[in-house]
Each structure stands twice: as C-alpha cells, then as structure tokens.
Image 1 (cartoon, rainbow, N blue to C red):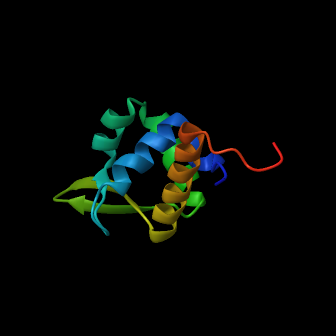
Image 2 (image 1 turned 90 degrees about the vertical axis):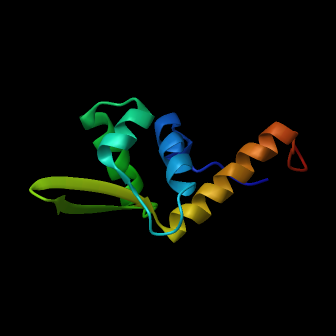
Length: 102
C-alpha cells in the first residue's frame, strides 16, 4: 500500500496540487486564480504555497505584466511524482487494499 504524503494530504494543498497537476508541463496559474480555487485568504494561500515550494513540489515564478507584479505557481516533476503516489494511496484506501499482517 502506498503511503500518505502529509504535505499533500492537507485539503487545501491537495486541491492546489490537483489543479496544478492538470496543467501541461511548465504551465502555471496566477496567485489570484489559485486563491479563488482554494477559497483562501492571501496569507493562507501564501503559507500553503510556501509549504509546497519548500517540499520541492511546486515552483513560484514572479514577474511583471506591464507595471503589475504577477506571481504564478507551477508543479515540478518531483511534485507530479509525489502527487501520483498520494493518489495511489487514496485509491488503495477506496479499494480497501490492506497490507498483509493488519
């Protein structure tokens, strides 16, 4: 049975990783869009993104569009692998996979 990834397992971070995983490689979403998806405050979203970034699961890109700053998050290759492992963990639970000896 796959193991839970405690970084991803938290509901807001799972939602963020699910959305970012659905994007093609190298594409990201802007902070404002992620905030709406996560239904989070600026500070709360920032903290969740920082946790995912520290784990190496996402990359944060900052640039300017005209004179306006833009912050985007995109999933990394290690992030995709961790997300897939966590999904397998969830599938195992749903399918009732129980390790031998339990």
